[in-house]
Length: 454
Image (cartoon, rainbow, N blue to C red; front, side):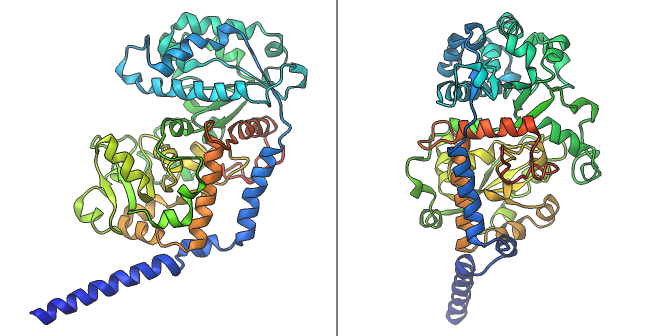
């Protein structure tokens, strides 16, 4: 019996040694795909993005009307005082309102802003719709719009006006009529804004194109897709997506002034392989099977260990485990999008995306970035057929591949975080806006463009 125990121990030690060897030296199929590009080509493209944004000559004008800006209501949402939104179903709007204010203030204070509208490439509409909705009233929204519609620059050049909001029912054709009772926006208002550049939580143009394809009519979505083409038809001439990037502005876990926080050494020193926690509630569009696939103990225990997998945990434990994990799972929910992607990016954790439609639903800065620059993309079909094997194989990366993803994450952090000490948010916002106006994306069908010169 003692001899058998020793043999079993030897087998376990050998298996562990093989696993460590694979993690540090043996390329996975993903490595072979990545290594088609040389390290110089990948790092060179990221350097070129940084250079292009740092040397941008794009200028913009910001309307300075108090009725549009509403600094009093902005302060209310940031400080969470005097909020007026009464409905539990819209609690998320309060978070979205904060995101809008943080981004608007970054744009208002940046040196790319010009006071001479004749020198501007576009005109920024500083209406904080989330603040007006959650700390104001329909009348506040009405006064802001009337101030905008009265501007000569809006009347004469509507296609140069840029508005962004994270409030998803706004500018959603299938939802605006029902939401009018809360927003006060009528069809006539939307008609006046039909030629603007809209920055939203999803790319309405790209998504509408995607839904028309055969690929969108198959797969694991109930009845193909739950949305009808007519209901998602774009309401503005131009649109690009910031996705849920604003969620990263809520997190303060990572010291962004220290690049070593997401260096190769610190990555390998993290305790957990995988991080994923979800709710027990069912998701729409047949997504529950994906979100709960790993939660059962017999499945999660077969993943590379240790891993932090399960249902809800305390906020403190959640934050600690996320920061101490190498890979964070981004699994589709009621729609292809997920906040987890940007929590992962904020915390220097390599995202593993299991959402086939996400690159077409809500790409970020798609004239500049490929999603594969900063995330591992796994096919839904592969994941659902073998969750453990698919994830364990994806985690076997060479140092080259790990560095590739970490460098991509560093660039994305700078592009989505206005509070980053070396933030590129404003230049990236300007670049994407002008790219949208000129419709210059190298690969528009998937939202995975390269660096497009504007």
